[in-house]
Picture 1 (tube, rainbow, N blue to C red):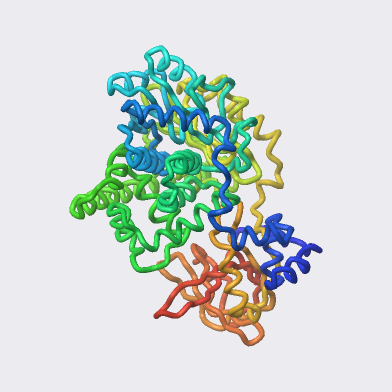
Picture 2: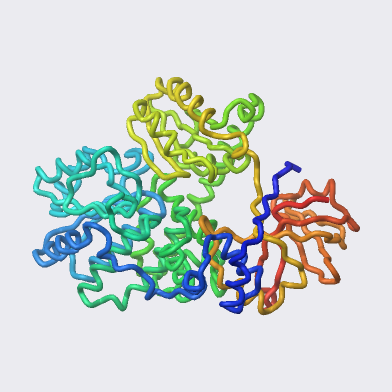
Length: 563
């Protein structure tokens, strides 16, 4: 067992006041306070907030100009080209905006570059696409914030451009009709954490409200929720409302393609969770882009034929299975290199590459390696003289900042605090490592590389009663920015022989002060060597709620334990 440091949040004075004001269990109030939700008003908004809490889309700088130009295009019968990205966020942003513009009477087309041939983002040479297709207006979704040259060239060709994005800008902004991006310092928008689908939704919100058709807005929440979770956006503010209400909407789906996808994921006739979005639905949509066949995912959401929908979903399933196999192979190769060479002992940021690696999946593998070695990881696929990189980082290290200081080496780069992408000539890889390693060594503390388990506070088994569970359910959905609460329970007795499930999970019965609960350790089969019936343990755990034979079942998901 890898030793982890348990960090238990200390009690705060606000907890009791919040518990009394809202009539909620103190353990729930403590969770809210740990997430910096300190006042009664903030707590009520978090627990009970509805869609009337959505911000006015016109608070975002450029929204008025974007809406005016789009309405002009519709009135004049001009063709609008949506330029999207190949990941879940970009695909669903494209689908949403196409549906919204079509409902307003627009002539709409779309273009999404292929990951394996075009790479990420809008390139200068892409200006030929709107020209060849006769479009007078291009709207980017989930990309374009660095498309300065494209925008200038498009304007010379008589094509206007509207940028909607959520990534960091470069040194200059495109001179577009409007740039909608909540991360810009002067955007004026109160919520800077939106994913690409969130920014697209705000544009749709403004357009539909202007046209008096805003009653249809909640329908878009389903796709917004999938894109937000898949893009690992923080589940705070509007993002949390999007996902919370999108999950409710996914209980009743009219879109034939989405319904077929939900069925293929085994999620029919059951409550869909944020975990299902991130680990079942999202990866199947993503697989199309990762394996170079993005068009399949877009077509699925416009399919009106049960046969076609089923065929497209089966193809996505097949691509996802290919993706998983490829991913596992690369993960094992990279892990062996790291362990054999002791790279995790030498470097605070791991950088590896290979000409045999599929660049469509290296981001997922980087994420898994990041979790295993608890440090930032950047993986590269070498192709035709170029190194295509994808990186993931731990919460304490803003990886994009490290890349910023290596930018003189890149042909292109971008991303977020915890996820980045970059491209450079293969011959510059040595220079990249020579530049990055000292930066990482200086900026990343040893303490940040120690695995830590942040615990919200103690929770006795007996306290998990009906009232507690009703209030606990209001904390959903969980994700980045609103992590699943972790509790600690001491003096727990193991009262059954631990069972290994599927050769990798562990299950046992745990008892504390007479209350017995089932405990599951996911990917913790190695615990069988230290755990036995009669062991006394302290548990770091989260709560799992599931349905079994129509009854709600409560189990413990064990994050860590100490014998």
